[in-house]
Image 1: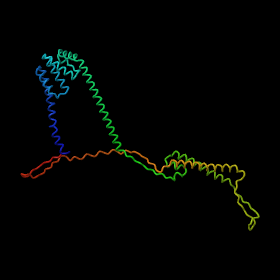
Image 2: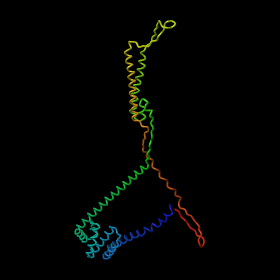
Image 3: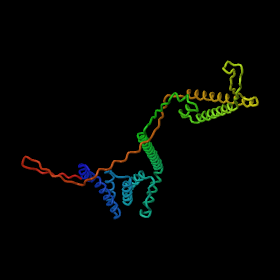
Length: 328
């Protein structure tokens, strides 16, 4: 705690003392006026209430009480002009005010009600004016509350934005991958579904072509033929023939067409995959994500070491002086 705070705490009662004293004096004076009214000192009540009203610095409730006491005192003294003046001022402060019939004598209540009827049009205007003031106060309060909520929401948004971190990820893509079969280019570009289509199609055609190739090759047979009258030492030569028997010619045609067709289909799908990958190729792709940092933890309050005292000595013109410093 700083050294200036004890001084402020010491001065605060001195600053608030006059305000508290005035409020206490006002309450004491009002209690005295009410006591004088109860003892029937109506002239004193009328004089003291009028004097206190003229000095001002009263709340509406205090003014209503003083005007009621002054009006009743004037009514009991048969000073009707003063009674009408104080009752009129009371009704202008509170148009719906009424006297307590269990405390106030019936003639005073009747006079007050008659005066209220006489001022009916003015009181209606005052009631409307009060309702308008209350409506304006309500609208103003709602407006301030909306502004407070808007400011609070804006503050929360600002704090949330301040905690957000923008992360940009740069992905570099290899151009040569687009020429790899089985949908490699599509997989690199993140288009997994289309990559699976190309991979499955090319894989099925490749497997079909391989199977057809081996099935076609399995139809071949070999045989040896001896040929006479050739330019060799013995005059004979042995030739090895590789052929497909006539009874397998239909199978050979089917397997050959299947081999050629599946190979052609494979390269066609491969060309489409490469073309698609090249069309959608980008050398690098930037991905932006926003993450929110955790709110910082409040810093711990500094440890309070408790009050301390420090004594210091200093020279003066007449000798030696001492000073005491207290820290809370």
